[in-house]
Length: 457
Length: 80
Image (cartoon, each protein chain N blue to C red):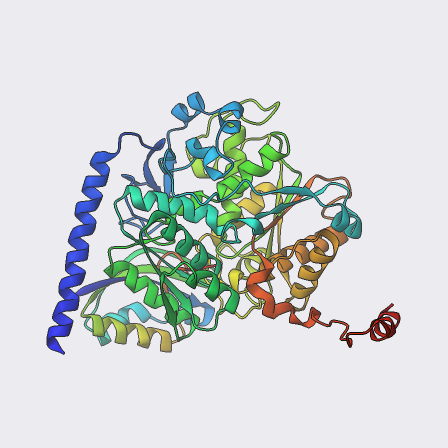
């Protein structure tokens, strides 16, 4: 037994040494770099080199990427973007990883569809759906993971890891397979079957943790300190989160380089919500929107707000896990953590890392946050499927029901240009809607069919 | 000896309780506060704990038992 543990410790030490050697060699090999200057603490402003770090060593605040916008503005244009690949890497100059040879399974450039059926139902004449459920691993997570995986390889890692309630697990496993590196994926044991299979098929090391949400969370936090892996949402987080900006870029490009009046966005940690807003403002400040003059980013790149960006940001959470919406509704300056208990597991993040920053975006954009009743989630899934032919997961049900609320309350006017983000695919959460399976059961005869068909009419 | 970074969140009824002082007295743990905010109804503190792994574990279990919420730094590491 003692020998066994010694062997394990030896293997782990060897892995640590190898990770450092690989990182050193990889950095020497780099001939081109992304247009970034490093990382900066969002709270105290201390600066760090672009390393696998996510927390300020002094004040423990979150680190964010600092861009070299002066150089970016010289190289990026609507034309340069249009000539790029049909994936998020068409925006490579605006992403924090070297984009010439990314880990790319073609995430992004998903359809933006005029929603005539859903729009008619809700009284909205100018409604569009950003259908991100058709990404390669069937959720928007492919955008963030593609950036994180590319950055992880740049840093020389040979293992990519995550802790996930499903969609992220699928995406990390898929991108690791594409990159030819090991994936270690931690999931809670009560996850939906579609998400477990959707991750396992790529042959990661899949670890199903039998414990409470808090226990899984704490375990993974400790593991990230001990193992020399690229944890996409921990030590890769500053780079990973930036991938969500492409949801803002694409909508603007697909609308003909203009911004919508409203966006309706599901939210868990608040990161995607804040990054869509950041994406809109980057485009404006860099002069990439039609009829909008470029402007300075000001002293803090992360809070830059170009006056031409007037899009109202509407956040949707499920009532069973709605810490940000609760803080917004109660005018609180802090977001209190909650114990998640929601059908929408992909939104069930009880202690949202970017909650307070998301509230600032709501304030600045004059948007809103809403906690969708749990009983409305399945109705939202069905409404989207029956009016638009798009099958979304529970998070999408939250978003569509939230949109319905905004339309009914008059917060969105009939002719306002509105984009609703559908971020995950319904095949991952079929358990939630199994009640719809109610076929006409017949004998193999015309008579049996006609009898049943008449009854059904 | 090891280190662990955590966030304690205090609800209104617990704000007056000297939990961090008691943590250092009851357990062999060095506490090092890095950032904090105390509002009307809630307060939070981020801090680094230094000590033997088992001692930190026991200390955090005691903190949780007082009703103070203990979270990893920087929000949940589980993602959607």
